[in-house]
Image 1: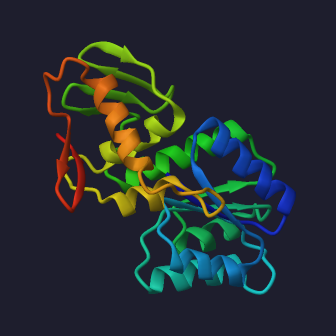
Image 2: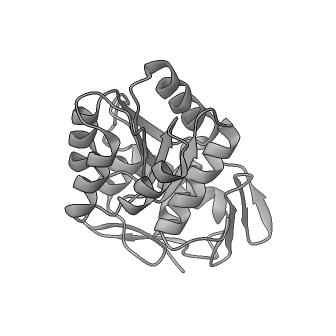
Length: 223
């Protein structure tokens, strides 16, 4: 999952990015002013935006209103020191999906991020079942045909994204866009490598056609 953090406190933004990338294996981009943040939010596909309200060049409320007026449906978690009830109301009514005030607990932030992303994909339950595959997003565990499966961080994120869009064909380009931030090198065959590895680990006996390849289109995890 790919997350954009728009926060002018660079140290805080980088700390959040580190936690989400290391603990949740999210791809995370950071912007440190409102003008640049709005441009990034409009130019790239994100699964979640974490947004401060008090930003240089363009404030968070204006960013919210601009994104929603253009039909951008990306879940937005407002993260700010503005804790007055009127601030919360303004933020939510401007289009925010959740509101967390500073200081905050990093574990709570991560849990809220995962919940917002799941709901955006129509998967409110933290346990996602697709065919014989069960993904527990709370503890990042995977079970296939009743058998625990050990996955690398990127294998897990690839599977999770396919599960969020189960029954739909997901292109290689879409997977690359949602699994990697701007600072990562994107090798031409990296998605094929992860798909091949997932097939071997999830279905070593080749009894199920869990991940289908649609020629010149992409991949689909069967429902």
